[in-house]
Length: 335
Image (cartoon, rainbow, N blue to C red; front, side, top):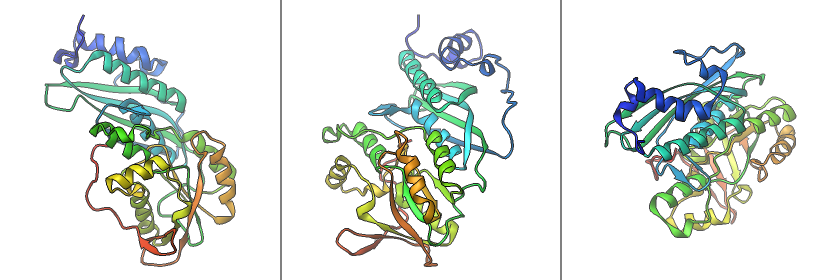
């Protein structure tokens, strides 16, 4: 029995059938996928719908708190949720390198299946390609998610309004620092763990509790600073943040201090930014804190009317500094 992936597993012949049956169908089992048609027939997705796609190239494939498998599900589930939708279905495409350990592949597929189960979504269609050694770095995954939108109005980066409260669902910077520590074998970061998590259930509770939410975004690449700058430009507003109010774990602060990094620019994979009318902020915070993924939720700032579209940080010592859009990439392939 083969222990490593061979090129013919992507040929469409018997080897492909064995890989599909023994690995993917076995762990993603559901009636829609089991039909093995060229496309999945979805009868219960009602307009308006949200669709999002993302590709995952993270290295290493396994890291504290998750793997490329969990990340591929969480990232797409969260992107669909940020439009006020309930994610229902996911497609997945695998680019696999010849020689990949079949045991590792099955472990990562199991991770995906577990993440999908927790999020309440079905993986209903997919594709597998096997490329020669050296043509990719072990494994890349693309996932596309779809879901029906239930929020009315639909949250958007264009909807921030002067006077709105700016909330985050928890501490920032854990995922980016975890990937750096794992990749570079930095022992002093051994107590930092990725925050990768599905946020769809928490987001639904926030919208149910607080009513219309103006903006929902997950601060992935570029972290909090990049995401808030994008929202400021889209909405034509500025934001004033309170450094003291922004939750960052002590282990992340220490690691960033040693490495010369700013946690506000590090990627997150299980956090959301929520911007909504100030009088609904406490209801939204209560809904977040009731979720295991929002216990450390906090209000961190306010949308202000400065047309310069700047994000300004009120520091702990009373000064102010501009959080600009990041230039360059401090750490590639974090998702």
